Image (cartoon, rainbow, N blue to C red; front, side, top):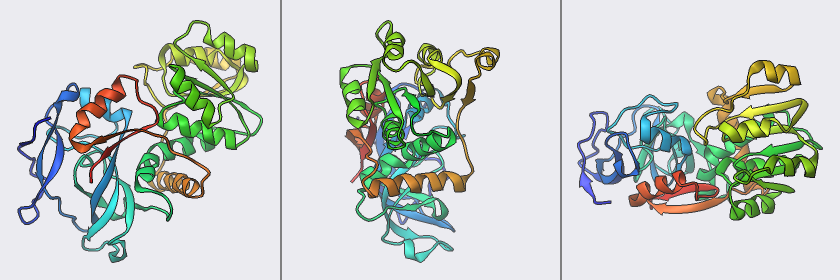
Length: 338
């Protein structure tokens, strides 16, 4: 990607004329619309802090937003994309806790501003990184650790259950495998390709299956006799096939659409089989923050290991997006900014 000065929107306030490196989304489209350029340094307002960004996380949702503007945040190009970052607080705005200066933190940014050398975050949104945990690991856990912890607790996962994890080698999936195993469940890891299945097995999946191979559900049934809980990250045909493995009283928890569409599960069919189906996840800000802090604490204690499968320099954000969309990635993908 060539560096160029991009016309910036008025909400990006310059700080004493200083410019920083950033990646701009000029318009919706393929990975090539992510262009490296310059931007004025952001300035923390009241109740905000300035973070010197070391790592920015990339989520699958961000690739969907880049392509078609779909996602949980209402923002329009031109903008600097990126929601989750980790780094050191270098400046504190009026009304924010001065003690945050110099602290290692991770934070969500409300949907934009993360693919840059510096970013502004609400002081209430930042989470201090526990001692002994690297900033890269903390960023890898910010969104995915929060999601995995929330899913496990929301599903009421219990020891002795048979749990099927789709996309078991992905950012959330690798954490779900570990959390389910730690809870005493028998874990079935579903992914595409030998390398991903080996990773799922290494993390605690006792049974693995390649969803791209015909008859994969029969092999799972032969191995474990069906499952009690499905974490559906894919949807489509894979999600529907996994649903068929559930017995009466089972739970189907859908939290992603990597396959492009929800699993086609009629409500009357689920009711007739006594299967509860939940679509999507959510929570109040305080709850989400608590789940993220829990994931960071588990990692700092050595009980949870984020898998960082790919690292790209900031200037190669387009390549990082392309890699995620190619389905060749495992675990979390990070941009290295410093």
